[in-house]
View 1 (cartoon, helix red, strand yellow):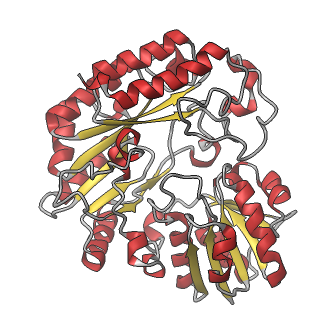
View 2 (cartoon, rainbow, N blue to C red):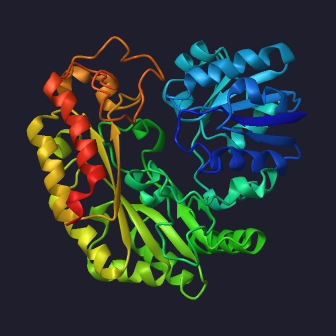
Length: 434
């Protein structure tokens, strides 16, 4: 039996190749461990019609998809159907809404949960589907999983040099640079996962049903993978793509203590409330952390409380200042259009940026994601959904200042819609840097 795992086309992304498909590579490694021949097809920057001839023959095609990728996954299923192979679907949307994903894409089987154990078992006839769904569940022994099968993709896919974390204001203007002060602006980087899950339940997040509760890899297991990748690929810059690597303070301290002297460099995502004092950031810096991103979302505390963020604008601002003192660059993720957005909250976001002064930012527009509390219960958040609220992939996250009629999934006053364009211009102008 041969399995081909596929990441669907995503040409709408401004840099679709910036992250290797670690989820597929984990599943591929598990298939190899069970003696099943596997290939990984990853050309997300090309149109489907242009890459079909490059997808190898297989007995089983496994497709991954987020909610926004569901239409692309359906087109891929339709294109592969004449080959006569079995077609299975996994990923976040398949876990959030397995029956809906099955019906929308026309796949033969959908996997609800993490696929490293379930897909090899299904291929061997040991995990039957019920009504087209395999209940895969969660994996708790993360150290027991083989490391991602990076060898199945070209080096240029694994070793990205896009500098994507530099932030939208520079990247979209073709002035991308490495946000980490390293050997050069073209230092290659790759990704690693040190834990799975998140204990928080932000109302806009689609993953609360998928990742509730955190499972950790041990620091020695992580270090061994880092050194193996460094030795194999010459990569010393790693993007830790966990939801929040420092939630377990003592594990994080142990992990980065082990990194001292290893000549490694890290970009990571943090929650401000997981950083208790400046000394913790100094410790992370000694261990190689050079860039941290924070999900600030908004500069208005009322919005943060409404979406169950469980952080304050004040503490996010304070921790960004601590990062600056520790020599760690920062980026904030902002979302326009969360429930309660008004002209006043837009001004509060501008004020936050002037006070916090992060090194970079990304501004996206709120989109209702299946699996999130806002998507399921919009009325509780004061929202009147538009016609495409339940249409996977109907909306997009990034827009230009002139887009006053696109990317608004619920009824919003025209003056607030226009304020998005004004906010985009303000952020790109850089006045908030001081």
